[in-house]
Length: 73
Image (tube, rainbow, N blue to C red; front, side, top):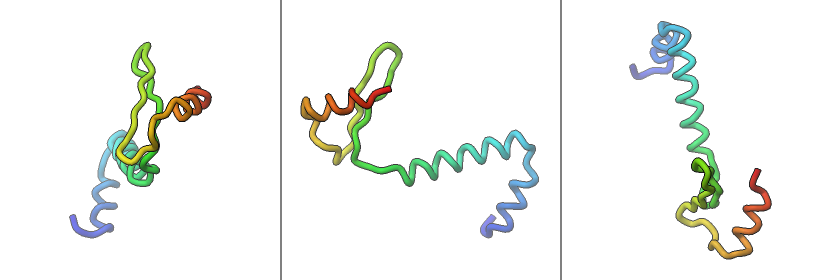
């Protein structure tokens, strides 16, 4: 498949459940590609809350961590 028309035809031939799964996969990839980079975030892991920082994130000073905790749901 090399053209959008061929891809669309192949998608239309899939059962609805597989079309939905494909839509979720494409949406997740697009969201990941457009997500802002360089910002640390808090992540829940069971009972723990972990600080996840990506390359280029601001320094994790006590003030920055405090601000993130204030915004934590």
